[in-house]
Image (cartoon, rainbow, N blue to C red):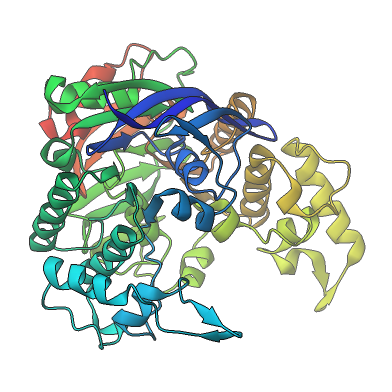
Length: 496
C-alpha cells in the first residue's frame, strides 16, 4: 500500500472527554477514503487535527513518510491538505476569479498584485465546469458550482489530499453525479479524497476504502469491495449493542400530551404518533433520518402540514414563543451555539428562560436569582466552585446540565431533548439519563431525539424508528429488545 497519509496513535482529550483514543490507520494515495461514524464518534475532531484547526494531544501524522504538524489551516494547505467544508469557504461578494486567488495574492511594496497562476486556475475551471464564468459573482452560483470553485482552488494549490465534508448534503441528484465525475478525475491525477457522508449508498458508489470511528476509537478500516452490503457497514458504525442499564418503568397511559397526525414537510413524510404524560420516548435513526427536523416542528421552528394537538388542544405553532407558552422546552443538538450563552455565567444562563420567576412587580430580585440558580446547580450536581463562572469554561457534561437547568427553570412539562448526551463522558451521560428519568417520574414528558442506539435503549420506554423522514416502526423497550431488528429497520430494510 502506497500511503499518502499515516495516522499513528492519535489521541485528543478535552476536560472530561476523550474525543480520539489512540486512533491509527493509513490512507492510500489516489484513493477515495470514506470516514464514517455516529455523531460524537470523533470524525470532526480528526479532520480538525488534519487541517490544523486543532492540535492533537499525542500521536503522529506522516505525509509521504515524513512527520507533519500543521498549526493552522494555512499551514495544512501549504503541506498539501485542503478541505471542502460543508459550510463552503467562499466569499459571495467576490467574483469567481477573485475567490480562486483569495489568500494567495502576491504583494509588492504592500500592494496586491495579480496572481501569476490565475491563468492555469481558469484553465482547470474551464475543463471541470465550462459553464462557470470567471467574472461572475460567486453569489450567483449554485452550491454545486461553488464546490467546484473550491476544488479548483485546492487542485491548483497542489493539494495531494482533499477532504470533502458532506459535499452532497445540499446539491441535487444531477449535481451529485457531476461531483462524482470530478472526484474520479482527481483520482486519475493522483489526488486523494477523504470523503465524509452519512449517505451509505454514496460510500459504496464512490469509495475505495472506509474507516469507521466509534466513541473516539478506530473500529476498523476495510476495502469497500470487501464489505458485504449496508448491514455490515451499519454494524461497524453502531457495534453490537447490549442493553444492561434500562430500568423498566410503569407508565399510566391515560393522558395524551402530544398527538401528531400526518406531519409532513420538506424532510418529514407523513409522520403520526402519540406521547403520554410521564413517558420517555425516543426517536432513533441514522444521521439524516429527520430527528432534528421533527424536534423543530414540535418547537415551532419549522413549518409543516398535518395536525398537532398538545395536551388535548389544537396547536399550530408559528413561533418558538407559542410552543414555550404551551409548556414545551428544547435542549438543542448544538448546546454551545444554540442552547447556551457561553460568555455569561451559569447563574445568568439558568434564569434566562423564566425572568418572571426572579422578579417582583417588574423589578429583578438579586436574592431570588441566587436562590433559583443555587437550587438547580445543587439539584443537577453542576460541578463548579461558583455559579458566577462563565459557562464556556465548564466541561461538556456540566454545560449540558446547565442547559437542562434552563429548561427546568422554564417550568415546562414537555421536554424535547436533541442528542442530550453528545460529547459528554460516561459518568456525565449516566447522570443526564438519571435526570431524564427523574423528570418523567415527576410527570414530565420527555422526547429524546438521538442517533446513538445505546442512548435510546438505556432510557426510553418506547422507541420510534425513523428512516429518511418516515416513521418505520414503534417498539416497546425491554431488556431483551432486539437491537439487530432495530439496525435492520433504520438502515432502510423495512420492518424485520
